[in-house]
Image (cartoon, rainbow, N blue to C red; front, side, top):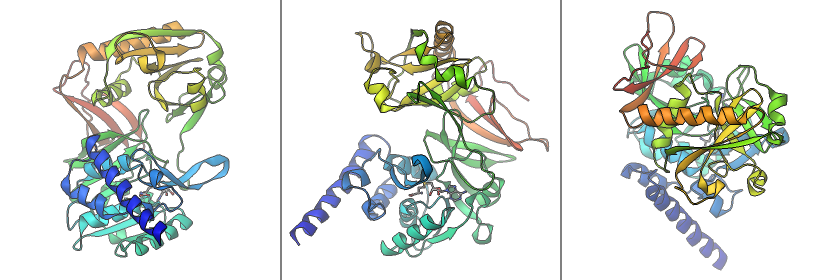
Length: 417
Ligand SMILES: C[S@@+](CC[C@H](N)C(=O)[O-])C[C@H]1O[C@@H](n2cnc3c(N)ncnc32)[C@H](O)[C@@H]1O
């Protein structure tokens, strides 16, 4: 009895600390979302996790793994859930479709947000995971949430249209079904698998869709028959892993061994602190034709601990590849030294290390000089054909669609088609 009581108190404290940290770290802003997060005990949805992990703001909890430890399903970290729900701005009475039920936690929070006049439908591809989500949602008092088992790429036209569609798996394609199943004035929040992944909140404007916000995020890829998966390229036996979303040829053998080659470090003179400047830089690097092979690079904890690689963050960094040479961004947190801790360095490895480090550092300076802080940016999704025109540098081409980045006011270099 005593241990039950202390367990109960403890989960309340962890829950409270999670909400407090989300506010302190500037992730949680809305009072309604705060109330919804408080109303759903997250540990009920991840009983396999310790309370520390269940309520860890930056901790995702894996609930199903496939061969070789590939994560098939997880509860996204509270920071990611909260950031996406801030983007979604779910209102009382909304009909909401979630793609990727996972544990059911996000659906439960949305159920509180829509209230009794609204409706949440969540689709899960994995039958076992769907059954678990259904059971947990019922046990937690969210029996009104409809859990469907199926391929969420097709949406759920039979129960649509929806005021909000929230995709909680990384999408290579923005499915036409999602766009078609949005009610007038609706909003799609979708984690886009770009060289640097961004969750975009898209709303229809005439013949195209425009982002009202973008957030850095990382998600399990959307799966299903014919689904496209990212390519992983190992560098130095997994010390670094490049995750590539395009088909361009890559010198995999050369990259595998390039940590054994020359190493170059170039300090850029550009400062980026922990604030929102990063997101604008990532978007610009994706749009910039002069930036070589921009991609997200993850680092192994062991390689970081051994000092083999020193990426910007313990998990990895913005990275670049050209031929058999790789580069990543770093700062004095990893590289040491007495200078400004927010100055960005480029670390490159391989035969062409000096040249790649120089090129990347120059692109950082070009952004800093000519683009940084010179207006707002957003994404636009246009359908190709049918007279729709793009209005900015293209950052991704998909079947029948292009995604472009727009800076306002437009700066020289923006092309109009
Ligand atoms: C990060 S988890 C979602 C987390 C979940 N929203 C939660 O609150 O726990 C991603 C989920 O998307 C599911 N998924 C992947 N592809 C899918 C598809 N085509 N249709 C529906 N679900 C899919 C995965 O099986 C996995 O459970």
